[in-house]
Image 1: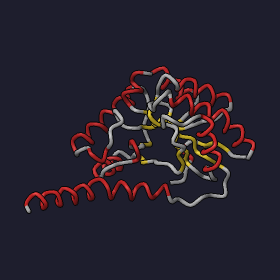
Image 2 (image 1 turned 30 degrees about the horizontal axis):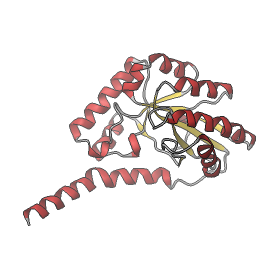
Image 3 (image 1 turned 60 degrees about the vertical axis):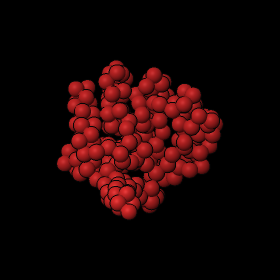
Image 4 (image 1 turned 90 degrees about the vertical axis):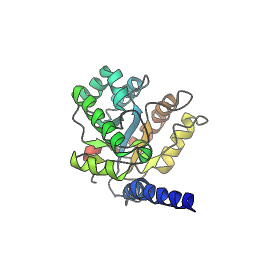
Length: 227
């Protein structure tokens, strides 16, 4: 009986601390109404990595500005890539310190993760305004700290499962072209993933970007998005 009571209390605490606030936050983006304006927001998570420079080359080719939600420890390892992002007009945002799930982080770990991340980005000369928690998961304390730091939590409307081991560039491109609508925030990845996943993402964009442009879409950064 005592064990059941403890389990019940822990379950309630998890719901209140992580699950409910995390899912409420997700619904703000996942159910957002579409706009008539033919604009899409290209965003990338989990970098920078050894593939990011190649992605930047592609974006430069089409004069497209994107938003990069960077893992702070990865950014520290690739300072030149961060510098190039900034010089070429991309928005640099934050994607946690080490890419750990906030739903299972306690208050102290959550605070340390956020503060250390911001310090690293500050040392790189980047003033962070936007934050995306790994997997879109957060907790009530993280949401509170983001507000106190005047950071906007940004999720997405469209994914193409570009991290999956068995996907291909053609599959990713097809998903993007089928799923993207006016005003969507697209979440792709320039780091992590299996089987050199970011290379498939780059290939997919090589196919999809010309089609989006031909259809009249304009690419904007997240600082132009109406929250």
